Image (cartoon, rainbow, N blue to C red; front, side, top):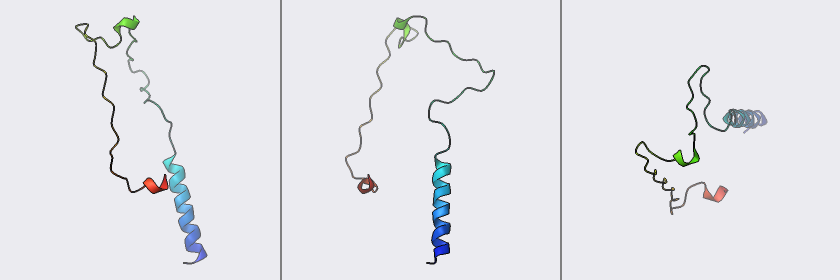
Length: 74
């Protein structure tokens, strides 16, 4: 491989990594003029359904026990 090929591959990799990091982390933004939902009036209303029953807590995700191909890199 020539120096020009290595330089070209490195430039492509840097551009790909730079573009892969674009954006902001966080929740999605609502469009301008869209109606937003109001927060519950009382802290007791959080998690309560229409009939007043408490919502069940979501179950966590358990990680798989099998190795992943990129584990040695981490």
